[in-house]
Amino acid sequence: MQVDLFDFDLPEEAIALRPARPRDNAKLLKINPHDENQLSHHHVFDLPDFLRAGDALVFNNTKVIPAQLAGLRKRGDIEAKVDLTLHMRNAMNEWKAFARPAKKLQVGDEILFGDLSAKVENKQDAGEVTLIFDKSGAELDSAIALVGHVPLPPYIASKRGEDEQDIKDYQTIYAEKPGAVAAPTAGLHTTESLLNALREKGISTHYLTLHVGAGTFLPVKVENTKNHKMHAELGEVSQQVAHDLNEVRKNGGRIICVGTTSLRLLESAVDRNGIIHPFQGATEIFITPGYQFKAVDLLMTNFHLPRSTLFMLVSAFSGLETMKSAYHHAIKNKYRFYSYGDTSLLWRSDLPENLR
Image 1 (cartoon, rainbow, N blue to C red):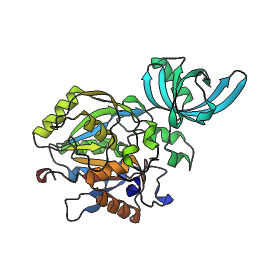
Image 2: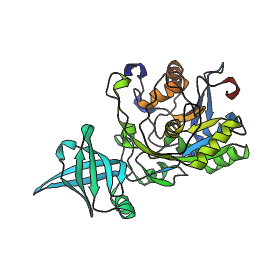
Image 3: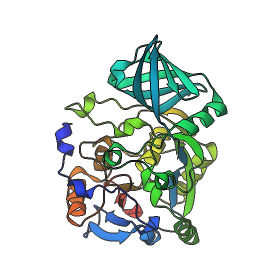
Image 4: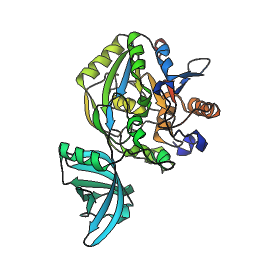
């Protein structure tokens, strides 16, 4: 498909620079292509009203690490400043990263980050490099935590600097497993009171892990979606979670993903018959209109960039014309966009009538 199909005009003032407080006070646009009134305005704390006993909510429990590093490249007596964003761990002492400016780096270069150092092992297209650090495992994690910064999305970082509040704001309340470079932002709206209200209604909660990479921020530069390559991200669906979600489906419940990251991982773990299997490894799944969803029925997700892989995904889920209309409606009604913005609840366009 032509990437231009997924373009739309977004006013700069629609980009949220801070989250709503409390978190579940953010606005929620209900988008149900099966309903005569397709679009309706609510808040995140209303979410239990739209779900049923027996439904299952699926969250991504990845934890954002301070993956933005400012380094000093040394090549003999010559030094140069270089910024790196870690985006996928290959081994206990090895990370893939995006470098800026990448032209200043060559294979074999040493980069210093205070007391931490790394060697450029490999260099690829689009500014991607592979780094071998002089520390490993938990020791490396601690060193990165000391010298790194929260990798705010570029559309926020270009307007203001990171501060102490971001360390709290840019993390879900259930973040558990370190490794993400970007937050699973739909989950930023979750509060303990919301989780309690969901459970009281008989809605179960389940947690999987997808370590979101910096590739999530990369623009689609090709003209046709078939030529775009997704960056791999590491994920895990445990045997218990796979079993529990299959039971939910068997008993007539719906599977609702909180965030596109949860959805992408479940759709990587499901077979053609709709059975979810344990999964551990990398996924490069790229979802565009025409994709047949097999694991997920509803999706809670924030509002995404024009021409982005995420807007393509939601267009595949609820229909391109539905989503274009919904985004136009959201902009007109002052919804706030992107990581710290408001959210939406989507029904799958081909959802069977008994699950609507």
